[in-house]
Picture 1: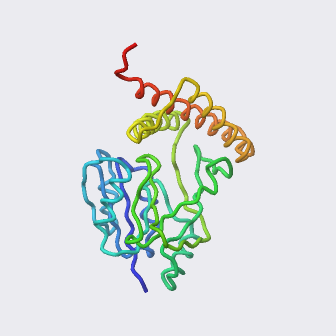
Picture 2: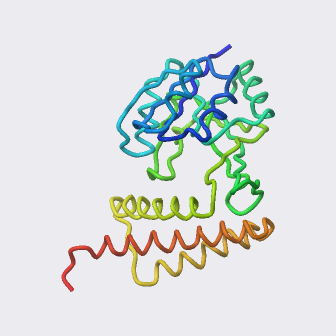
Picture 3: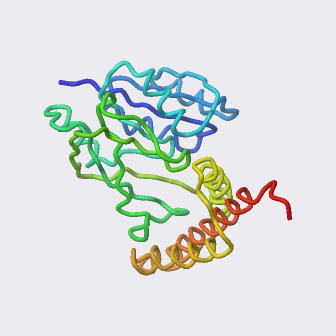
Length: 254
């Protein structure tokens, strides 16, 4: 039976890290927590579990996660965020995989909780994630705010039953604050990659972002919360391209 290393990156995660760690009890043969010098009770909570707790300066989400992968003892990896936990059905699915590991990686659905209510539409569900994988088959890549494990050519991917439970924000204001931060990080990443934005780009992405999430992805079926999620997403997309345009024009004589 293959052994699994669970890898988690943290920074001030006292609200959910206990739930996260409890959910992988009996699943992970090793837990590696890479912490960016938390100032809350994250470390004390982790010490209740048999974890390797390593402090490391944060240099971006994908870089931090790749650093954590290199610390893992085993090549079979379960990668979680601190505000995520395995559902009972997903736990059983992973146990079944440990008995018969067939693929290089496994996808599962992520169910997001918005201010106390589970969301079933827009981009928030099924929100498939590749979080169980053989580490030699790829690495974390893409943008530092939307990092994901990129499987190398030839890697096979299976699909597991059960949900990865996620608590991304505790309040409406928390959601606004996070999306403001992400729009800035996204603009900086796009600028580094050479992406451009003109006067109309933010408006085009604002309109399309709302239509895609609220109408095409049926965010309207989640009621008022669905409207809030899709509206904030569209506004964040607008801000990202507005900030990108500013970065494009920075230093250009007027």
